Length: 130
Image (cartoon, rainbow, N blue to C red; front, side, top):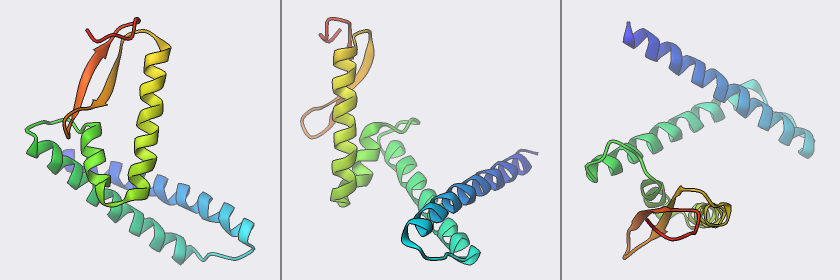
């Protein structure tokens, strides 16, 4: 029963991915004035699906290696270490989130860089760690 649910969910996710990729390809082909075949969209969807599976497995392995069951920001940053463009985009996003958390007040989790690793601090409305 669980396997059937997993397979049904996987099919729904693949269909949603195919639909989203199809929309993006349609928008881009209109801009460029070219055509894309359904086979191209299918092949692109399959390539993205395999990449998603690989990323998911890597992130799970990083968390397990750290003896955790939860994937954290530091796992994603570790995954991006060999792609400078991706790493810089992710780092900029984290910096913006960190600034928003500090400026927005309230109690939120903030990820900060420590001695070569990330550490998590609880921040209150006054911006000081608790």
